[in-house]
Image (cartoon, rainbow, N blue to C red; front, side):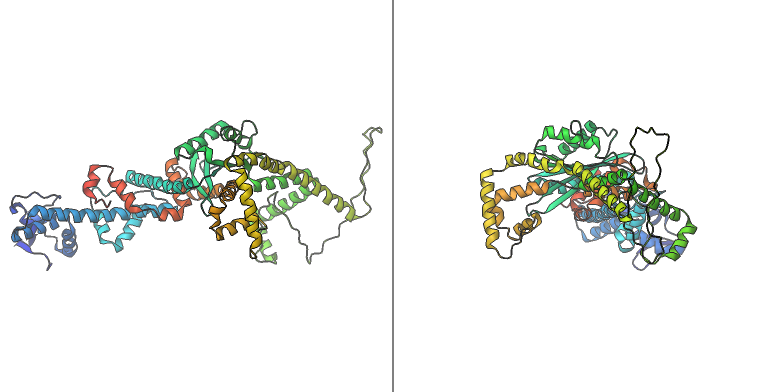
Length: 553
């Protein structure tokens, strides 16, 4: 009350003299809206006098009236004072807008739902109200009746700017590399929609391997032509030339090898090879090993039956809460928990301190009489139990080796056949010369250990002066390291998809889903984005924003 100048007192009613003097300030027009309470009718709600007077002090028309009244007394140019006040107000508005943008970025990076059941219960509004406790300007901003810049359309626009800034930053690193590889895969989200994930693998100037996730794209058809068109459109959208592609790694969630991806004649990799012959196709090697074990188990009846029995026993226990509780009391190792058995998992049997009968030979069964005597049916017999399991072991190993060769036999031949295509980018004579020089350097160095490709890379990274001396060798190393062998980055994007698009958020639009997935997958890069540049881009959209917020750059 002391800091207010009471202009009138009548019938227990008060008004502020500076505000009441508004019409007499040289006929000046107020730039902000004003209310009649403190200017004409007077204030009489004395129970809330402190709260109302503090709120009135923070209002724009009160500050403008005080400024004009002081300027009138001191004979200072009113318009220059108004300009300074306007500029100060625009800077404060910009600070509030930065708080709004940073709050949206935080929710997206932490994959927290932005909207709520109502606007008042949304996580975005609750976060802003929480930040008001430490920021008086933001509290005043949210108390405005109009133009708070927190609507759903504004949120989508800010998130769109964030999603455009982040890929630009990622593409700067990708385009700095000479070669790149494509890693792609498809999956189904919670809404039973097909999502196609794209990642780019490249090697930077220090021979460090990087894999960047570029987004999720909804597909209507999973044919080879449709998937190929999507990949080409994405490369063109990000201005990535196919001539720099040296590797493809495709996988799928069903069908062994995914014919639409890995088809030899009409698959995605075949269409890509027609466009760029130097791009080597690599099927997900870990998946190949997984399929090999699965085929082996199916081909050997004894292994299949043993795993089926174990699988049924596990489900017999975990499907009943009573049996699971009983099993918990019988556990010896507290860290051992029953989990559903995967047919391709490695199973280790440990029978310790358990009274189990020793293995015996099965009973020899007679040949059924219904078969013709002309058919020679020989029944395999064993004299000892170890002979039976030895035969089973050899059968399992032979079957595994056979499937391993069928799954992996084409990889070495493919590498040898296409190595000539790689050398089209490299001077063969200089490569051989640099290779000989590198061998001499390694032999002269006592501490160098180059027993593997990883050792060579580490040595080149330590002796970075060799990058200029061994340019062709470094270029060849970049090509080799660019070729992908797994699709782990794409699989991690599927994990991100399951965290972002949950059952409670199953109706999320594709553009919002892609934005949040990008920001969440690249957390470190998202937190390093320049919010001032994002704020300037948002302000420059229309004239109203330019007159409300200050532009930094």
